[in-house]
Amino acid sequence: MEKISGFQITGLRLSGFKSFAQPTKLSFGNPTVITGGNGRGKSSIADAIAYAVTGLPFFAERNIDRLHSESDPELFVTMRFMDDKGVSHELTRSHNGSRTGIVYDGQELRQLDLTEMFGEKDVFLSIFNPLYFIEELGEDGKNLLQRYLPMIPQEKVLAELSDPIRQRLPAETLLSPEGRVKQLRKDIRELENSVIYLQGQQDLALSQQKTGQTRRAELEAKRSSIQEEKQALEAKRYAGIDTAELESTLTDLSAQYSELFNDNSDESGLDELDARLYEQARKLAERSASVYESKFTQAIAAATERVKALGAKYNAEVSAGKAIVPGFVCPTCRRAVSEEDVPVVRKAFQQSVSGIVAEGKEQRAQLEELKAMDAQSKETFQKFKEEDVAKLEQSVRELTEERGRVLESGSRASAQRRNQLEELRTRMQTLTSDLEYGNLSAEEYDRMKACGEELRQIEAELSALKNTVIPAEEEFEAKIQAAQKQIAEQKEAVGCLLQYIAKRVELTLAELQMNRVSISLYDVVKSTGEVKDVFRFEYRGRRYDRLSLSEKIRAGMEVSELMKRLTGRNYPVFVDNMESVDDLNNVRPTGQVLMAKCVRNADLNIRAVKPILNEMPMAA
Image (cartoon, rainbow, N blue to C red):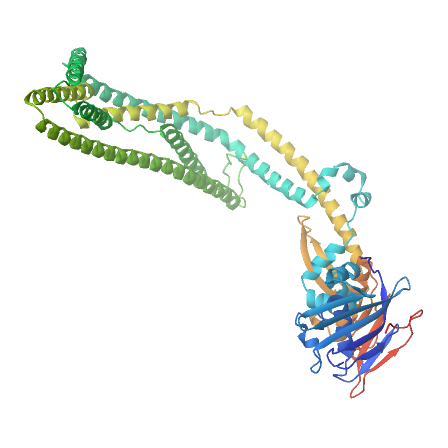
């Protein structure tokens, strides 16, 4: 549908609408004065015009049932108007029960079509009803204005700035200057913090180096002790035992077992049973001898070293913080601290200590989590091992019992062969256990395995300490100089961006200039240059909620003209309660004005002060 940029209302036909229960025809000019006592239909005319265009009353109330007259359930409003090209049109909206009909120049339309023609509801009512924008939209009015405020081109803003500033503002930084300033300020703070702490890092690095050396000595001593214990257990394991002879004997027994097992000429069904029993016994021996091996050793060692390093850093910072008195030379900035600076420097050290404590807690939490995961993994392994051993033992018992039953039913020769197999199997199991444990008890065997695990952890931690890199003093100096140079450059960039933002806000708000009304959508913070969203509506410097009714009407007329200018739509304005207004000399209306005035006990009277030219006869 084609946009209607402007129109003037020439007449209304109403029926079943509020106080207009019977069909009524009204004519209007520009301007038009509407007078009458209370309840005679003045406000109903405003509601009818708003309803015809938007489907809602003058103040956009959602309950439209109140628009129906009490005696007629069928409502219709026909608005006759002439557009800005001098063409007359007719818009009819009817409502009966739950059905609403819209007809425009004889064609049925949807409300969406009317919105395309007359603009969105809030735009139309902000022009037509001077009190709607501030009293009904409130904060939403800010969003409405922002949608229709013209974008200020970068070129126009840059043209208002000096050449040096323009040269410092590349186009990509102007896509979001506020975001760029925020990011630059964040970068500057980070760089300044970096400069403050870099000079103190060298002392901390030396402290960490000494701590690392002490820790390495402790670990090496512990490693030596555990190695001795492990070597002693390994020496005891096979002391006096000829393992080669045991292995040879086991091989012979295995060959005898296989030969005897395969000689099943006198047995029936025992070959498969014995094979299953042997397999289960083998699995039982292997599972019983299995030992947990951790996969978290390297990670735990690295985390332990990070915690210790942070502890050393914390002690260094706390010691330095306690020594802060007037005249104290700061280890970070290398200057003497005055009495006035003591609280600031102490606060800086406290913040540093708090940061170290927070990081230490985080690292310790990670270490504890790794240890917990390791313990859980070991517990899970042990649980599964116990379950597997129990299942295998049960399987061996069941197979043994089944084998016994088969033996009882066999011949003496078969029983003798099976006894020999059982004896061989027992001896094989004993030899297998001897080869695994040797002279060690189960506890000693487990300790020997644990020593190996502890040695792996120590080696991992020593490797982590060896790979720790401590920067040289020259590296700190180079980083400080680079950071200071970046700070200077970024502060200069921030200054240029702030001047650009302030000028853009100034040009944007120029579009909201009115006679006595002022609307502020943005504030520029002088100390930071930050642009903050606000919404202030004032009339002659006074807040809207402190105005009289006449002042609110005058203010609303200026806002109505502002909305016309921003949206390019010159629509009629309906001024209610004109009896409370002496004059409207603060604004010069650019379109049709309908003024309603209460006259005590008077009948409704509509007087067109100046008829609208070129009005065509209203359609039947």
